[in-house]
Image 1 (cartoon, rainbow, N blue to C red):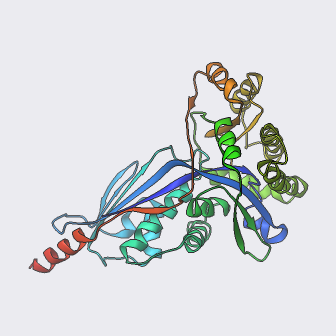
Image 2: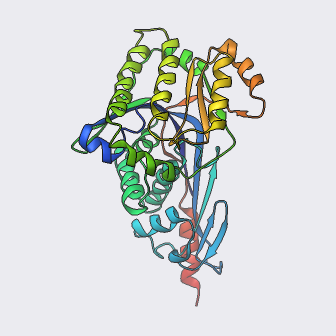
Length: 344
């Protein structure tokens, strides 16, 4: 049995400039962090007396005989992509997540990175952070044909708070953010994660976002510039409250790109939070629903919760490990291989 643990991420600034349709022409940059909410992928070799070869457990429970019959697209295509086809007899792959899918937390990339981490470990291979991120980007964009950017795969593979720079030549550079313990603690305590209670397929929203990018160059350039502005604040060259104000500004810019990014419900939640003490915030991910990130002084946070009683507040901490294997044992694989050899 092998278990991978992959964090979800929060993207602060620069989202949208990580789409290859944009950064291969103009370059891009994103400031993001991973948090202590995780996607877990468990993989084990099935005992030979199971009638089916593949058991996939997610929101469905699948018991099938061939890879092509698997309904989960990432699992099905991932097994094909890595060339795993009967090499280990039967396989069980079990997904569990701390947060709901399609909610703006990079869950699809966390799933793919965690899946590849566990499947490569099954093959006896060690995959580094850069290679894992590259594999996940290629898989989501070229194999699954999803309208996704390139930041999430990098963020969850590396872990921690980073500036991710996307060069015109396709190179991706990861720069860990240097920040004092005091500043980091102040930032962490000023952030609130609010679940709006809805989810969406991010590629649907992102499709229109990518289409609109051509005519929104000035907006995206300004959003990219905010990454370095935020870095200056974190480096101590400004009050931390300026970080919240900058989040407010980037949300205004993001909303201007597409009318699918927000909704009347989201606008009402955001306005209520601002009225009750939040200095800024944004909807995470591609937009339209999911988790909202708010920046608010700690003394104002209870007031905000009271003003939004129908929405779940999710406490969190920053994390720095990225996708990792937390359990690894090949004893069951060896045992079941011996059993298979005994079968007539």
